[in-house]
Structures are given as C-alpha cells and as structure tokens.
Length: 233
Image (cartoon, rainbow, N blue to C red):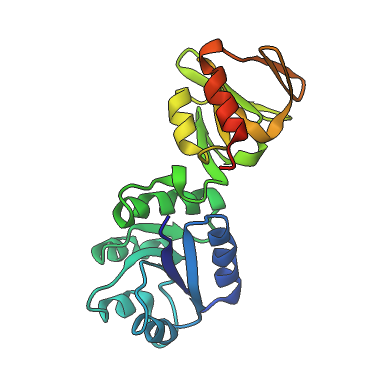
C-alpha cells in the first residue's frame, strides 16, 4: 500500500506532538515533518511531494490560509485550529476538513477518511491503518483495535463483534466487516461466523474454541479455513 506523505504545520509544540501521535495510529500516514512555521513547511514542500497538510491557521508572520495561497499546486489540507470562525475561509481554499481544537482521535480519523477518498480513491478508513477501524453502533462511533476482536457473528441485519469484555452490535454485514480488517487475519468459518485466527484456543471436530465461546465450523468452510490457518499471511 502506498503511503500518504503528510506534514504538520503548527506553532504550538503540544499540538504538533498530538498530531504526530494520532498519525502513528494509521499505518498509511507517513509524517515527513512537524513544522513550527509556514516557512519551515514551505522549504520541505519545495523538495518533496506532499499529499496532505495538517495546518494551523493562526501562526506568526505568515498564517495558514496565506501560506496555502502561496503554493501553486497545494496538497490536500486539513485545518487544525482553536477558532471556529475561520471555517468558511478554510473551505474557500478547498480544505478537506476543519478540526477545532481540542479534537479527539475519533474526529481525527473521520477527517482522514474524508480526505483519503480524494487522495486514494480505492482506500477508506477500512484500510487506513487496519490495526484500528471505526465501528458505528446507534449514535456512538467506537475506535476498535482489530487485534482485540475475538470473533464476529451475523444476527439478521446486524453483526455482533465479540471482545473479551464487551460486544458491539453495528448494522453491518459479515462481508462488510471482513473488508474492514486485515486480510488473512480473520477467517470465515461458517455462514454466520468470522474468527480472529490469533484468538483460537483449539479446534475439536467441528467446534472452534475462542475464550469461553464455542463456534461451529461449517463443512463447506473447512477447507478454506484450514488453508487460511496454514497461510503465513
């Protein structure tokens, strides 16, 4: 997968550090630099092709909006600011999203999802940093670490995602869930079940044991499941 090369431009060290941390959760993002000024960022952009800029507006000498206007072919921009009143101006320059500080990791990931549709049309949040995915249930969006998922069960129009200490119930098909997670890490074992191969305790006959749960292994899925277990992917 091709990485998205990005830079962070913010005169506040704490804000830069937070963005670096947030970016570290998404394996498709390659932070080329965290810049304290527009001038520092401009020097980098003269020598490298940058796909995405996280840009503060209120900076000394040259503000973020003015900086972008100096660029002949500006990259995609996500505005990160403490001020709501600049939103219209930000969208006038084609900003992909507008994050008002302080913003959460969840809100950050939503912004990445939005701009990635333009940067990499074939990608979505489902395959940006597959170690984390967003799962929406009712009015809440959970930031889920895929390695913590035990298994998934289809229940009508919903999918029940089992963790050691909780179950999420999004309105999502099994096939849609499988597209969200790392290929090879989750195996279809039944028309109603997908399991995390790393969580399997043991298999006895047509029963797979994961934690305290017993999951059926469908006869039509057995060969594919066995091949998946033997794969190194």
